[in-house]
Image (tube, rainbow, N blue to C red; front, side):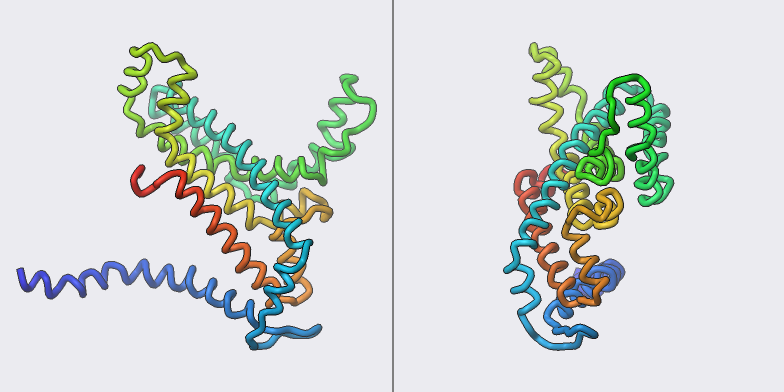
Length: 287
């Protein structure tokens, strides 16, 4: 027993070493570097080590920053809503209306087909479809529904949110589907036997038991949208702002310390949002 106790610390250290090295190299080191650079100073030509607060005071003292964050949160909220509706519906269909594992796998693989290509290819595919002279406008004009092309379809908030939903819907489907598959079907049968209709069963049994999956999917979608810049840049036509685009513009101007300060602020905002989600759903308890 004493031998086991003496070996326990070493055994524990060996067990946690691989994951500690991975997290340290790929998570702690990059974040630490960004945090250090955020306090550096810069001029028109270069940046250099220092310890100044001007990067944070400039970022937090500008109304442009708050408007940009509100715009990004607006994209995140809309994307979360539509991905939740789509993800929940698809997961519900696969979990409760497809009764064979084989067909569930086949349909799941079909859902993943768009993800076999890169995000940029999938985004660019919307441009000829939504453009002023694109497929959708041409189709509406040919059947007489509109006289003039719809201008809001491309390079607008609509196209940005549409691309986000297209890119990230599967991140909502997978965790919700996993939660639904873990629901004990006897709970649903008991609700139906007790006189609950379909809507009552859904809202009082299925959704509460899917909270972990909804929370995990929400964390994926919100964090991805908050940090994304290429979607806003391409689908917004360079006319829309987000936190990611703001940081990219600063990096293009070699203002690395300012971009690092914005990255730290963004990380703090995302961590606050994730912690609020974790308060709504206790994942440790639910999982």
